[in-house]
Image (tube, rainbow, N blue to C red; front, side, top):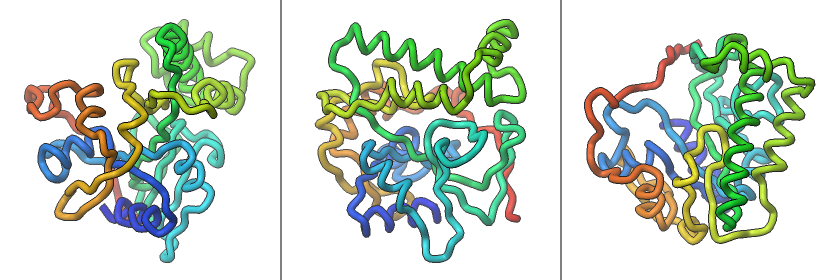
Length: 246
């Protein structure tokens, strides 16, 4: 919550747009705070705001840092995080790359309105993310050992794979459709109209007011379906990590 407060204040001060998203937004709408079994915070930023945020973010106390694959060697993900430098988080999937407690920040990109081309882009980005994950992981993140080693031994650096991903997903010309195109983004059905992020509205989260997209109901329905109905108990799972104060 401290990280979210700092990011909210910075964005408000510098005129940058952000939106509570994903499970955080479901929690805000359905519970007015965290989903009871959730344990992180996600926000979306339009691509231009996202890039400007990464160039300029800082906090007066110097305890939060924005990290992303362009500036961090061997960074596991392709989206940004704001990290509390006073903490340490240990996750099995990121063995060998440890950071502090974080908040996820996902860029939102324009997506082609041509459905056939969109299907091609989604298939290719899925493959590129698999290749990058295999190259950067110390252990096999796939079910197939053969695929893991084929991807890992491809004569492409992690940096070059990331450049290919960026070239594929970042569209300079606006379209009528947007999506979180990172590896943590939804499938094609999760794409939503660009007009949904044309402006922002206030929404309550843990007793405070934050920003989300004006078309948040449409976004949630497209991405999650009946988001107001609680999932079965067996699907109410948390992330697997341990967190410590340094």
